[in-house]
Length: 252
Image (cartoon, rainbow, N blue to C red; front, top):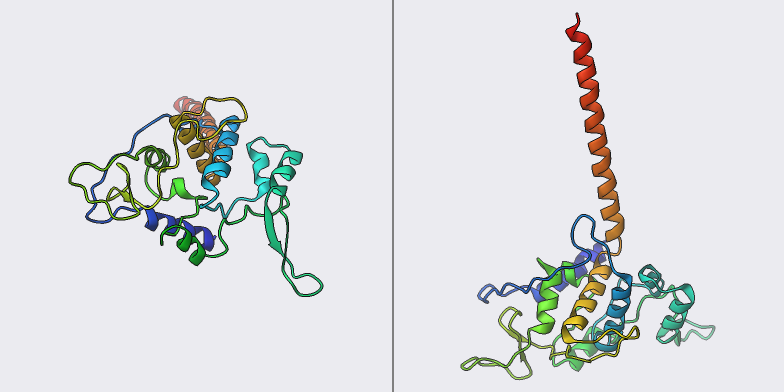
């Protein structure tokens, strides 16, 4: 639990606005998972995972997701084994005391793209790519913010001084971001044949990232509905009992 809290705090620090930066309200869109009855679309989550693998995974980790968790978004046990085997993880020590590489198993966590933070910074112009496991929970209105961020790359306006190695983003605090634009039309070819517009890609990967942040969202929503139904039923029974009780007392 402490690691999760620290990761959320780190993600927030990396994406929080500077005190002097201009706040820009993110774009708003409807999400299947919002609302008391909100649910995840498993087909969308699988598309989002494909985007993560092909676009995001070269820089960003998912430290709190194991391959076996992917069964929750509709992959079969055999499919998860195939997906895991595409990755190499460090294991050991062996009988000689050496660490070694092996294909990942469903029980393994999705490997970090870099061996350490220093290498991650060196590979990204000094910027440390944040872990994405909790990114949609790292700031207020997270899904809309991440969606807007991915689609917010534009040419810097006249008079705006862009620092070397930075990109202009209309929704990032201060408008200068170290990550270059990643989402464009047809950046991926979806396995299910869905047309891969930039908006579709951004929508799908945000849904997937919200699942990584709240994998028990559907269970929580279902529990909330049951609690409300129980409370309503209890209120009705209490009211009927009260009427019956006072009716008896009124006869005396």
